[in-house]
Amino acid sequence: MRLAIQRLACVLALLLLTGQAARAEAPFYVIEDNDFLGPGGSDIQSTLPLLANPAVTLLGLTVVTGDGWENAEAANILRFLEIAGRTDVPVAEGAVYPLVNTVARMREWERRFGTIPWKGAWGGTGSIDAAPATEPPIGPLPAGAPRTHAIAEPAALFLIRQVHLHPHQVTIVEAGPMTNLALAIRLDPTFTATAKQLVFMGGLIDTNMAAVTGNANFASDFNILFDPEAAHIVLTADWPRIVSLGNVSGSVMMTPALMDRIAAVRTPVTEYLERYFASLPLWDEMATAVAVNPALVTRSVDAYMDVDLTDGMDYGHAHVWPEALAPKDRGMRRVTIVQAIDTSRFLDGFVRDAQSTRAGPAAGPHH
Image (cartoon, rainbow, N blue to C red; front, top):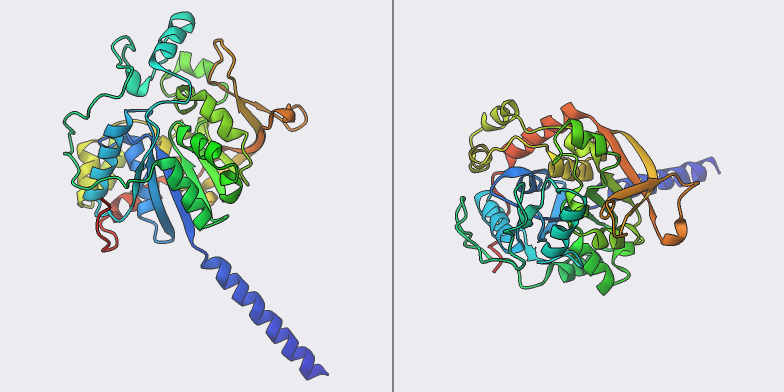
């Protein structure tokens, strides 16, 4: 009897270890959706924690108009992947325009309620008056035109297909306006429930005074402001988990000293980063780093979040409620709002990722 019990214990222990090993070896699938303004800068640099980590399977990058027009952004990220030796990563082009917002609507909003500090493709930090209402042709690119091309599949369909190929395993990192995700949700109501989680850079809360006393652009929730209707659709969809990198995302800067650390190792990627250095917060880099390594988070709070769509000065602003006060009949979801991260570990990891992104698998380019 004792021998039988011992054998049963051994079998149970073996099954437990096998299960733990299977969980440990489970692939970490990621798709990043972003407005890849380039060359360099936070949008492009956000890919480094995904490209450099051998535990991450980067299924693809999807592109949306935001910081720049979609066609130029796609060209910039394709060119960077060439420089990084990662033409194996598919790039899918996405939404050229927000769901409802337009240049004319944003111009009218500014006339009524005040200047939006960063308007992305529709004027940057300058005036919106000369912004084209339709996507212009791509001009000369500082880093050169890419030789590779985006895949033929539109971003929303690519997102849906990949999530269903890997049910409950795909982390979506959203670091731009949410138009592509909203389109995917409207095309396939099962899309969000079939994903693993959404990690997004946005959802700034109570930054009104920061815009007065600090840098107004850094206190502006551009990713939501550019397409508020899309953000509302996304934040009220049935994701298993939503993580927001809002206010904290502007707390760590790309500085000359940090760039010197990165450039101490000379590779095509570090030389590219040094050439197009910009002293800006590491907004999107933090989002991808936290998606890959949640242990970086040292403080967070759960709340219910939605976006104001009323015609007024709060249009496009995120609002949060505690569970007891949230109007849940509006479909809003619980969101984990990151409030602090381990800055030293984040920066050390970012330097490591930048220096180790050199070359990828031998797969050919996507045409």
